[in-house]
Length: 124
Image (cartoon, rainbow, N blue to C red; front, side, top):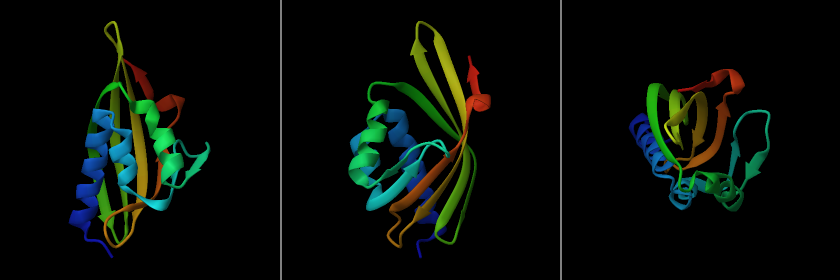
C-alpha cells in the first residue's frame, strides 16, 4: 500500500502538470490499465493511450490549480480543488471539482473520478 505522503505527492504532481498543460506527463502518472471518468457519468477512458487522448485537450491552456482539501487513506485519495482557466481576452472560468483517485503500491494512479457539473462552473 502506498504511503499517504506518496499519494499526496502524486496528487500535487498531477495538478502541477494539469496547470502546465502537459498531457504526456499526466498520462505517465497512470498505470497502463487505469481508468478516468471526468466528469462522472461521462465517458470512461480506459488505458494510458485513451487517457493521453483525454488530457490532450489541456495543451496550450493557461490554467491554475488549487487544492482546497485533500484526504489520503489506504490506497485512495479524495480532494476538493479548483481549476481556473484563462479563456483569453480577460475572460476566466473556474471549476470546483471533487476528485477521487486510487493508487497502486508504487503511487501510480489506477483510477480517477471527477465529480463536477455546470453548477460548479463560475465565469470570472
